[in-house]
Length: 195
Image 1: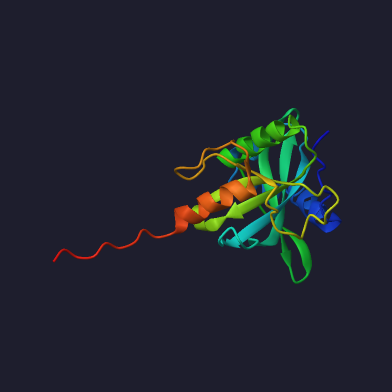
Image 2: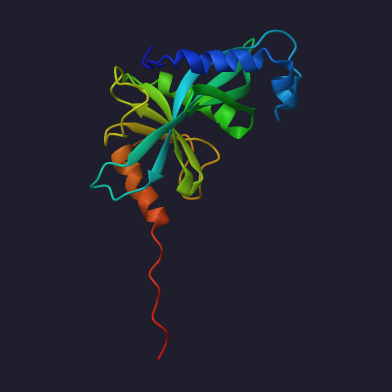
């Protein structure tokens, strides 16, 4: 198996299990699929969620920070929702349940990564400046999943929906995609006024 899924912090998993066991948390969630599930559900495939705070020129390493852990909530053979946790001063805590296009897109990208020959540690990388989420395939499978920055040889798989000009589910090395993202955020030069 080329994907080495890192274990989530035990308190993060416990907080999701507690939320899944709470009728109030599930009932109040904005996830019709989760509310309508008959039978048991389980949190699986924990992925650390990192945020790229500022896209920088490709000559520097991008700066990322860990913001949470995301679990796919499975019922039988399918994912019906996702649960996100966040780090607070008191430790890891449940944040919210959600569903939507990133759920199936994440599953598709993980299947795609499984078919690659290289071993990776899967993570999620959010790029708020572009309203973009990617599956980040980190090359160091033994690394602490809560730290690090994308290496030039790491692979990013943009999830659908991807921003205009960036194709969803097309794997890119960081060294190739980062300049494209930087270009997307660079304002066009203002033309001088006609004389």
